[in-house]
Amino acid sequence: MPGAVGWSESGNAYYQSQKQCNKTSFAFYQAVRDLLPVWVLEDMRLMEVLHWEEGGKVSSYSPSEALLYALVHDHQPYAHYLLAHYPQEALAMPSISFSCCQSSAPHLAMAIRYGRVAILRTILHTLRAAPHSGLAGYINRRGCHRVEGGKTPLHLACELHRTDCLILLLGHGACPHIADASGNTPLDTLLQVMWESQRELRLKRLCLDSLLLYLPEGLTFKLKEQLRAEPTAWKELVGQDLYVWLAGTSPPSLFTVSMQRLLRALPTHRFPEALEELSLPDFLKPQALRKQPSPK
Image (cartoon, rainbow, N blue to C red; front, side, top):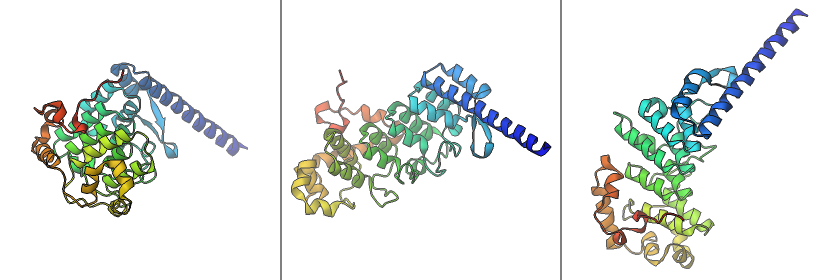
């Protein structure tokens, strides 16, 4: 049956092509994982490596997709190269194989999820430097419903209590009271994480201190009534001073108000450098802004 033979040959060629794409794709993944030099990775990306898309489409890796690999494996030189040489392409949406939601900000989410603070900082600087970049819109995008639960990058930083990421996002204009797909503010997300588990409570409190420095005095969030209903438990979690502010029974401390005004006065085009250069003794800075001792 000639038709059957033709179909068999075509199907075998299709399978071999997919197999070869998977092989070269994995080789590129391994090369980024092994932190090979940038020139090697770019030679592979531009000349040798293909990956298989749905529907049988064969594609080379875009700068955006390569940046996702660099984020996963913390290949900082490669990430910096991609962002310097392809600033728009590196932060464009990757193909559907890499991101199921084409309206999210997958590079920000990946940087936060893996704690890639240095690369996150470069991403934000790249966005800030690009004319008409729409930084505010990009940084406040809701994530994929399936993967990120409709959370913004700021919600994700609160959920994972990534204080360094949180400060970078806030300093670059992330909205501190934006709601996610469920109507929760970043403060709701962080308080819920604290309520559900007291593990790593010091890091969560540090994250809370950072977030509150950017919030207005009149706080609006969904968990406020729960705080008022269970004052004893919440005072143990957040402390007496923060509790009365969060519950709405007392204004923030004078020190908090002073620090909020100081942070608002910092030039946004020099963040976080201007923050790091604050001429304050370390012991006067809020805990979230103090230099942390290096782990031994």
